[in-house]
Image (cartoon, rainbow, N blue to C red; front, side, top):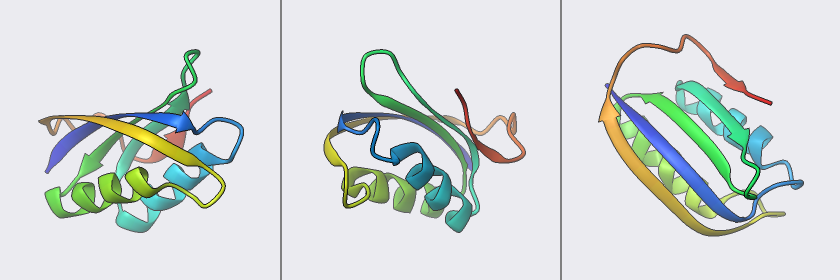
Length: 90
């Protein structure tokens, strides 16, 4: 188990990207959160198995069909168990 922090850049706000992130996290059994940032990026923090997080990162790099992902900055950290669900933060 580990923790993944992601910053997604591109056309990722106003296109349902956070809902996409939520769906992917639920499908992969991850906990954590996602939110829009004032600078136009989408931020996500996910916790789970290494395999699930690798797939999550792969899906973020692709994004939904209506978005354009230019870059995904990812940093890893130790699992801390701070989240019990995955949610969209406002």
